[in-house]
Image 1: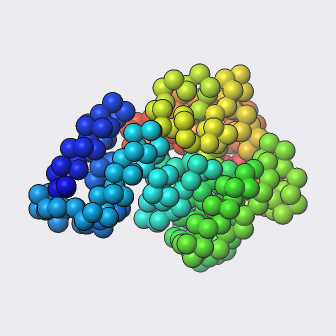
Image 2: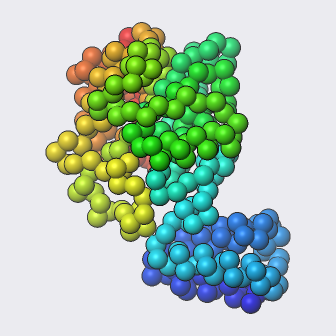
Length: 289
């Protein structure tokens, strides 16, 4: 089987699940992961024969893709903020909009002299650990903690911290009712979170491979308490953020105004709403003074 034949088999098989461009992208990512070929070289060798062992592995991947499994889970890893991260069904697959949140946070941390002073930073609902690990890579002096309710998610996050040679203090606790003294008795310079925010009624808008494979506890909230995590994070921040500190939040694109209003009513002096690269209300930077 040649590469071009394999590519056609992939795209034909995935056409009922993905649009043509996405199917083509998944095909290339699968080939790149197994065959370790640079993109430019691949374009010139599509008529070449695949090694039999590579063909077998790629057709195995195709079978899982046809069942809706995300490629990142099949491969067991993903790229995020120029880092390699292990992912599995216990953690969400990190998204590009979270990279934008990190960009914004890093700019602020540098303005707070985070590259020369030790700042205490907390990530709430860490999942794969993508946020604290990315920040620690670029701000090595930072003293970073990360909390999650899921022990299995924390085990993945710890592996990712080791993989990327970053030291993070991981805490197992529930931000809706935190009890760990190391969490609640610390004052932070920066608090950041990408909590569950997709309303149950919005499930119909999501791709089936997300609904069927990614952890629902990290994604969904009831319609009648859509801001439950933002309310809890705001309450925690009021007690645990330094006067000149900042809170960063990734949010539901449909609840930007409501989330800002919640923060202001709680006592935050500023709550700046920012759009992502797609023009969607996606993140907030808030302060108490």
